Image (cartoon, rainbow, N blue to C red; front, side):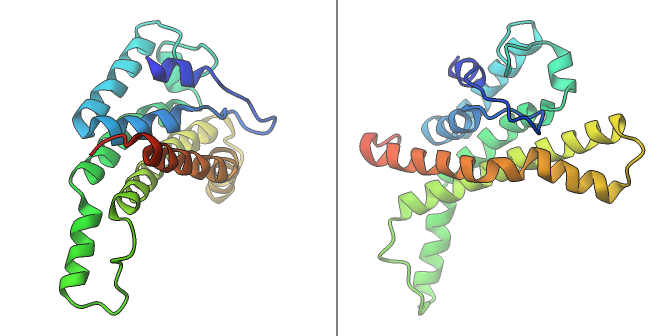
Length: 189
């Protein structure tokens, strides 16, 4: 239950209901190390444990109220992100695209790049975008339901400021940690 530990290593910023946790790091490591199916199942186990009452969500929260709260979309996004990032990585989609360009004789050859590192980076960014998408949509709805006087565009902007923008740099640092961790320990061949 590394997710439970990473969820409860959290810091709340004063301007957002979304805490900084190590969950994104854990989700993406599970995708790279376990592959799409096992990573999805590990995240499903985490979500089900929380829904059944184990205090595994950020802030030691649990139950349906945590899923319905402002961070519920991120929690559900972990499931999809684990699968998608794992799928991209285990199927070496980046390597396949690279081989296509090499075969086509592209002048901008990528032969000198480490395909494994590029594949890991692209997989993690895809997973991160999925988490942001789920989190953004849910947080947008949450804000819309609680602040009904604002216009839709204002809510869109507020949701970006509260749920995405503050976390971009931190989450990219987590991706760099994963890539460097892999260079030392070789997570998966």
